Image (cartoon, rainbow, N blue to C red):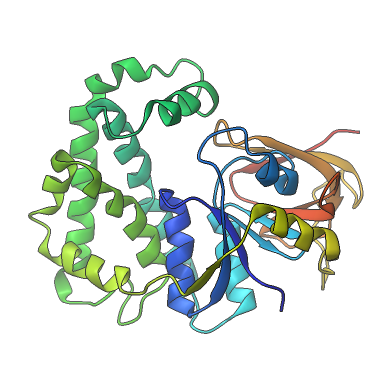
Length: 304
C-alpha cells in the first residue's frame, strides 16, 4: 500500500479528528504541513482548488473532507472499524450532530477576540465567511454561542451518564473523535474552559479519547508529496460506478462545496460509488490525479 499522506496544520480541529483516527487504527502516516492561510500553491496543485484541510493523499488519489477520508481509512484498514457494524447510521448521525459544536466555538472566539492572529482572521473574513457576515459584531452573539455550547455539552454529559467508556459503547469509534475535536478547542480561553468544569463525565471521556494518540507520523515536504503523485497512477475503480442522471463518465464537471469558501474543483467525471464524487484532473506538477469528495454537502454540475 502507498503511504498515507495527510496535508494539514497542527491547529486544525478537523485535522485532529483524522489524526485521532490514525491513532485509533495504529496507522503510520506522512505529515505534510499546509499553510493556514492562502496562498497554498502545493496544496491546491493536488486538490485543484479546494483549500480546506485535512486532505488525505494516497499516491495519485486525493481525498477531501473528513467524511470522505474516514471511509477511505476503513477501506485501507478495516479493523478496528470507525463505524461499528450495525450502528453505522447511529454513528453518522451522532458524529454530524457533535460537529455542530465546532462553528459555535469558532464564532464564540471571534466574539471574545484575541484568540487568533490577525492574518488568520483576515483570511477567513475575506475568503471563507458568507457574504454579509460581520465579524465586528461577533461579540453580540457571544452569549448565545456560549449557551449553545453548554446545551451540546449537556447532551453529551447525559449520554455518558450510564457509565459507558465511549459514546457508542465499550470501544472508541468515529463518533468519539468527531465529538472530541470541537470540544478540545474550548481549552483556548478561560471563558470556554469554564464550560467544561461541571462536566466530569465529559472530561474523563476526553482523557480516554485523547489517549488514542496520533498513530505513527513522520514528516514529509509538500514538494515530495507532489512527486509521489506525479510518479503514481490513480487507483482503478472496482465495481459498478454510480453516475448522476444526465451525466456520463468523462464529462467535464464542477464540484462545489455547500460550505462557503472551500474553493471549487473542475475536471472530468471519474468512476465512484454511491457515497463519493471523483474528478480526474491533469495538473502541471503532479500529473494526473483523481480528487475525491463525499457525496453529501457537495454539488456536482456538468459544465459541457
